[in-house]
View 1 (tube, each protein chain N blue to C red):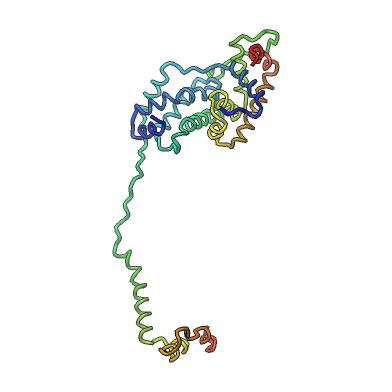
View 2 (view 1 turned 90 degrees about the vertical axis):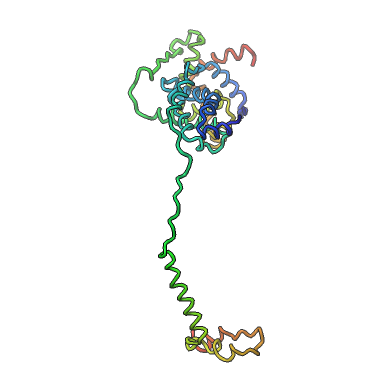
Length: 187
Length: 118
């Protein structure tokens, strides 16, 4: 059944239809929130919140075809709101990310590379991070990502260009090292 | 996915981002979501219908003066009671001359001008 049909059924109170919607879209929404919050402990709560909002009033989604984008927008806004709220430095919210570049002579292992890239993504401005996550991690087209961000495609491309530049600058020497695999495989 | 305007930079970015962590959904996340959904009420989609109040007698009262005004105007016009305020070209022989040509509308504007009426 299409998202439109499922939404209609969910609006009628069908838990089964809503479960199907969740099975289709929960993972990408969760991944986006995780990326936006750098793996915060409450990433699941924020993703859940987007679905609860949908359940409470499925009719608020004007275009059923854009349901995934709608969920991502709601979840991303929740993540951005959370990042702007002043909060105490809870231990679980301040993951210690060891900077592998502290020892530039040591080659990066897989886990270090992941932590390094995650940390650099997390350091990007939130809208750049969101644009990057939508396009590069979630595979949305520029048009779809622009719709989620509620900006023009040109503005999205500008965000992406700045995100790429920012990432490259912040990774500096690590950028080449991370590209090593690419060079080896001749891609 | 659309390719970026700078394919080399785009490819490099993809290669670097491929090293990022792949977030995994915690076990039972979907069950927790559905359990929460089960406790959340849905907002009613129906817009409460507010019936229009029945028209009362007084809602029609406004029409009475208008109707009376119209009736008075017709009565005055038919009886010529107010002809003295009208130009003679409108109320006099010329206007009532049946033999006048059809296109002779009596020169109402001229009549007002001649008699100095506005």
